[in-house]
Image (cartoon, rainbow, N blue to C red; front, side, top):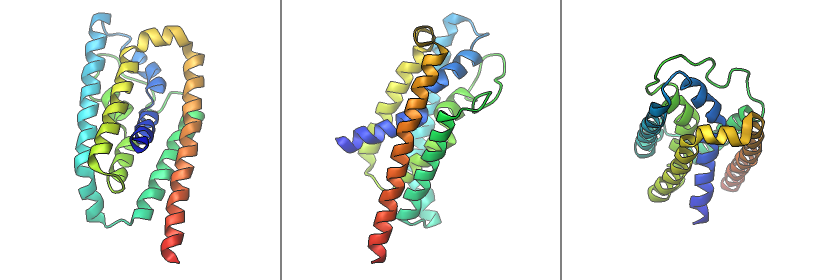
Length: 196
C-alpha cells in the first residue's frame, strides 16, 4: 500500500497540476467560460489515454533496448531531478513558452502539460521495477487528483493567487528533488551490492 501511495505521489508531482493552472488559464482565456470545463475534461482524458499507452506498452521498448535495472533507476532519478529543478527555478514563459489563441486540442494541455515526456519516461522506467496493477492504481489515483485540481483551476487561482501557486509548486519541487536523489541512491546501492 505504501508503495502505491509513494508512486502515486511521484506521478502527481511530475504532472504538476498546480504549476499547470496558469498555463491552462492562459490557453483558455479566449474560450467561452461554459466550454472551458468541457475542454479541460477532454484534454485530461486524452492525457490519461496517452499515459495508459505508455504504461502497458513502454516496457516492450525498454526490453528491446536491453537496459539494465540500475541504468533505468538512475536515469529515472535524473529525469525527476531535472523536473524538480524546473519546478523550483521556473523559466519566464513557463515550460512551453507562449500559448496560441483559440481552442486547444491535445497540444499543449493534454500533451505535454499533463502527459509530458517526463512522466511518460518515468512511467516506462517504473514498469520494469513494479507490478502492473499497483502502477495502474498509482497512475489512476494521481490522474484523478490532477484532474480535480485542474477542473477547479479558476477558483484555486482566485483563492491561492499567483504567489500561493508558485510557493506550493516550489515546495512540490523540493519533495521531488529528495525522491529523485533517493531513487539514484537505491540504484547505486544495488549496483554496488551486485558488483560485490
